[in-house]
Length: 458
Image (cartoon, rainbow, N blue to C red; front, side, top):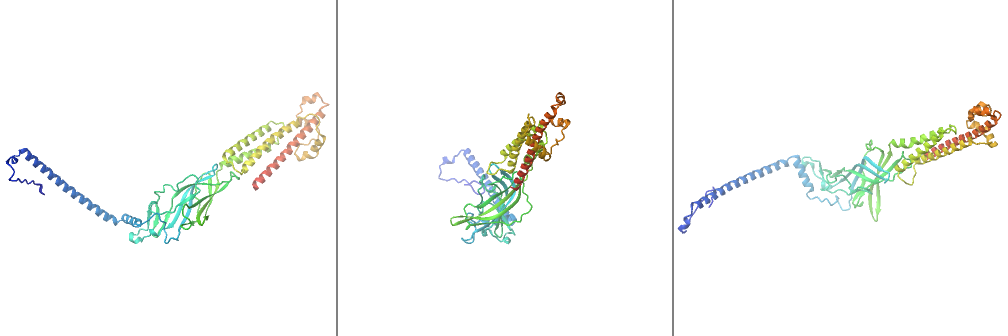
């Protein structure tokens, strides 16, 4: 038998035969060794039990001390609030009372306005506020704690989503870890960061000076107005801090709407974003080339029809306007409206082509042989010469003829008698060609002025 002190007591029955008492010494030694091992094991066991008891006592004391600290009070508050809380049931005092949810969308970044797919990507903070009477407490009972943070998995939140969201299906960024602020009076504030891709029917009539109005609709997927009442949160608008490289947010408005489906009515909140293009690169790419074409075309009319620079100006303008229209075709999406800058560029392209045609016609008239029609010559000399800013040809001096018509001295020496008639005929054709050229100039000016006035009014 093994006693509590680890000593071994051996009792032998007297009735046992003598052969049983004659145990070899080795067996007795084994029994004594087993006894010592058992004694050691018992001592170690009692030591482990003692250490475990001390550890449990230390843990209990630590918990008692922790319960009196702010962290302990906060833990106790969370446990008390969520003990009998049912997160799948909306907060209400009676069944017929709806939950009033206030919404405000604070835009922070205009990421992109996709002109091809007509979508707007915007980043911001969706501010939501509501009241849950089940989450009220007395701050004096919890060391003056007036606010606690809970997660989405621990409490009820309204199922507010962006209606007609195009690309993204998730509502918030990392919504599983976003904290929700709960105050002691039951008021709840939740400000999750969001990214929305919403359709935006942009109009490019005034491109690149265009402005657009895009809207984001917020509403509940499942709850009607009898369960959740959405309203806008009144926040005074301050200075815009929206970040954007190409678009500037000029204004943002919030409005309440309501759609009906049978007997149920679903409240919505519409957030309207007013955007204006601020990138100046498009102005240099679109406006300056058209101005250059206009000025060069008008200046080309003051060159003689025989000057080769006129052909160079006309061809350069045609190439420049063709490249500009090609760039607009790849930048601006196809739609029902044609941008005014595209209409103006197309008109400049046509006028540049007409400029080349007029240059060819005046050159052919200048080099015509024979006598020009007398009525046209008389009309040019008596009426159109002064109005078209031409040099007077009334003084028929040979030097002046040579200046105007380029008649060489060798030709004048070869046939001195025929010079006046030949030169007069050439001068008449030159005047006719110049009159046609000047009339085309004024027609061009009138067309450009009318075009600019019409585009400005539209």
